[in-house]
Length: 229
View 1: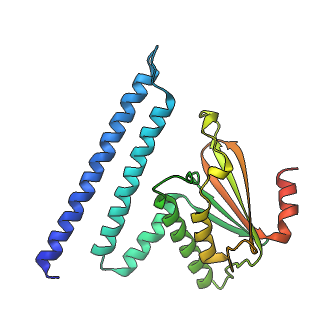
View 2: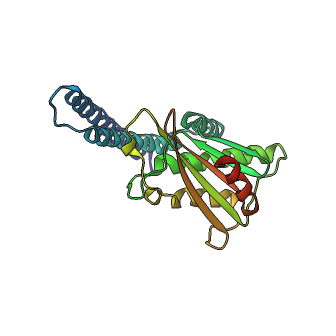
View 3: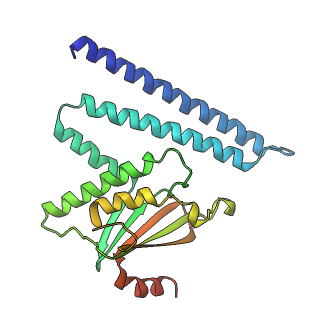
């Protein structure tokens, strides 16, 4: 591909990103209008309409982020700068990983998507980057990377207690598969049914989020008894 074709391709990518950015702005404007109508007296607009429009805004924003990530990869020639960029993503997305007493804990400032959600990259790609970054740091400092053969993965779903309780979903509506796929790539011998158990529970908190605990099956009974006496 010659220089002219490269520049043409980059222009098309920028145009596409700008169009997506416009969709974000439009969706946010509609969400604001719905919220204003919702706050007026005698309105028939329901809170769920506002929530749905915010979700659409978020999806468009995530698509914009993905387009810019791909563009960054293409135009960043310095590999070290790009590695630093990926490290910054872990901090930006607020994913924390903590390992103690043979239990791996992952904290994310978002809820696990609904199983019917069509766009889920906003969680899984940053989670993959966070695991990759954490494992590399462990290896560089001569610390072991945990690997589980027969394990239990526990999902603690945290919901903002200041928002309507109707937001709380049934556990079987949470899309755990993609999260488990990412976890398995780094820490599990296998995610088959003979090797992996899952457990879900919900708590109300100060903000939405998800905490994931990964442990050997033998540790689970004592751990859950301490958490839920």
